[in-house]
Image (tube, rainbow, N blue to C red; front, side, top):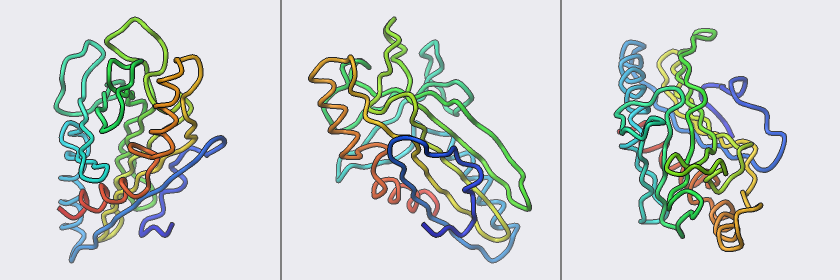
Amino acid sequence: MNYKIDVQHLLPVNTIGSANNAAAFQTFHSEAEAFDKFRSLSRKLLQINDWKVNAGKNPTDFYLHNKEQEKLAFAEMNDLVKIKMPAPKNQTGKGFDWVVINKLDSIEDTGMKVLLLQMKPHSCAETMNDQIAHFYTEDATNNFILAKKGKTVQLSIHGRNEIPNVKSIGFLNSCRNFFVANGGIFGGSKVQWQDFAEEFIKK
């Protein structure tokens, strides 16, 4: 994939499973205008409850909580996100797929401003079970990088080390996770994340 702003050095190495990438950018008339856009989109990226990702015409919904299950407006480190997809329910996650925000950094790097948000699969906060409640194993990450360099602002989304979570969770849930992971309803589909990136950066 060709990027307007190169952010590859900020990503985890893909050592196992699959990887996917999506990116969209916008170039402005001035650096001041680009900075204003970067600042407003940084705020928007942290408002995960308002994300819009669709599988076809069916929306995927996101709910941001802390570990005490209190609903939050803006993402912070170690917050949890439960994801409701247009797919069979994840029995391990009480009907949801769960991720944790395990990296949230503001970076200034060689004339580039970056907000990096990384998520990885997590257990369900509503049970005492430590099993990963997600269609990928805990090796996977989804990396959102909002970057500004010069007059350009770019959002790129990168899935890394994606392996379907199919072990020791029962036959039906294994089938469900295999279907979702390979169908790419969330995370595995470059098409859906590409749509998300383009809508996010241009509105």
